[in-house]
Image 1 (spheres, rainbow, N blue to C red):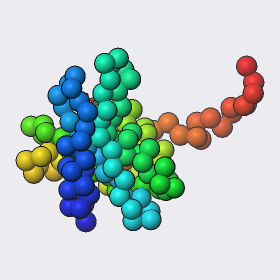
Image 2 (image 1 turned 120 degrees about the horizontal axis):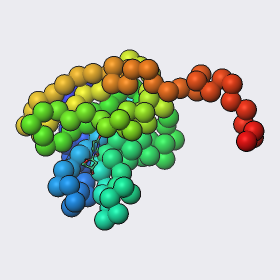
Image 3 (image 1 turned 30 degrees about the vertical axis):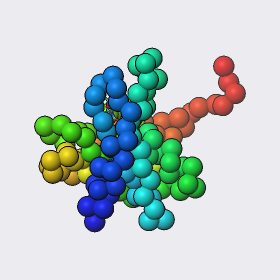
Length: 137
Ligand code: THU
């Protein structure tokens, strides 16, 4: 089932704009509608302004009108499957349940399967703000 998602992520990886790191990453998200949403990393000469592939795929999903992630694939040219960075784990967790599968892949065919929950144990969630008082100083 993840093969089509990995292939889609690999296709968009080639479009990544990564002149500073030289490390192109592709991400594909399957949403509950069955649609596949793609993203690649987009770097910037002001380095912190660069964005990760996963963030791009999430933005594409939201722009398409979907908001529930059911599967994720990430691919890069590494010696081992590249995991989503910490920030992207939190971004994915916003729209994915703990059991959502994440396939990490290399362009030479290695894969590693995990889940959003396993990648981000103890995630920060809305329930941690149960005493928040919006509008208070
Ligand atoms: N990168 C991603 O796109 N996703 C990740 O989860 C890991 C890192 C990108 C960001 C940057 O453009 C390059 O890989 C090197 O860090």
